[in-house]
Image (cartoon, rainbow, N blue to C red; front, side, top):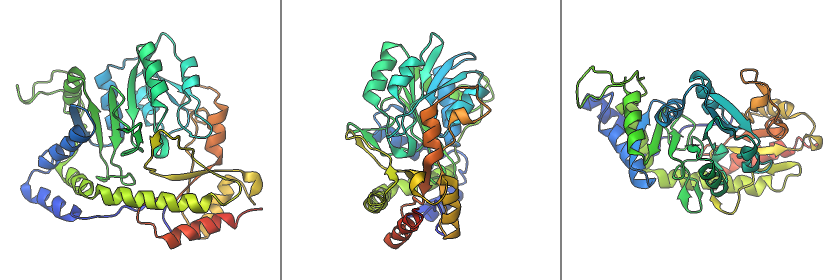
Length: 363
């Protein structure tokens, strides 16, 4: 079976994890600080806070931004919906907008229609590594005095007009989950330039305590969103080999583009010219009329051929946990996307086999 994802150790992962263990600093420690320092130094932000995972990073960002019960946040209806779920936990109201039918990222024109006097924040989610139209989005947000919180869980090292995704929002979040470009197993990061927000997030991340003042004095009702030093050591080792990781992800994507571009009925995600993309997951939209089965049927057939795939994210309008709404483009995109094995150590022979297998299912 060719798995959909497969983590890889590129260099000193085992060595640095063992050093973290030997140091006895297995909760906080120097590797957590080194991971945070990397983001401060490379993402044009003054503050970086490591978190236990990408979802707690979003939660921390919402707390730092002062999202309150009844506040509306707008996000795309087709994406991984962690931000929407956190909004519900906080008593905020997730409002969903359409995505562009070709880029699968937030449609800024539809976003504008969803703004009300209750809207507090906009959450661009950079799906599969593509980057939203940040020029139009930032102009709209500024005109309406809205907070922008970028969800960069899938777009680490992708760029928009020569700037990294994550450099645009007031607050931005990342994920280091096992399948992500840089992994700590589970883990996340929040970055911002705002001193007040950063201090507020530091308190919320660790029980609301400022240990530099008084231990066990709670200044606010905080959480424990901290990343362990052991996990951070894994991430630091991965970052040491980021050039190799990036190079191999580009190699895999380029091979897929060459092969898939020749298959009728297969549409790759559109990447606009102002985006320098580092694809996290290879996804294609299928014209099922040209295939022998439905999208889900094709996935089953490929599994029987020894290839693990994933469907597109379920659109928000298809899920009962959210208030009823209609997003026909999101629903269409969701029901026709198949995500192929995407890990950076895929061999050319494996990619050829995957593409040939998909092509063999033409009607």
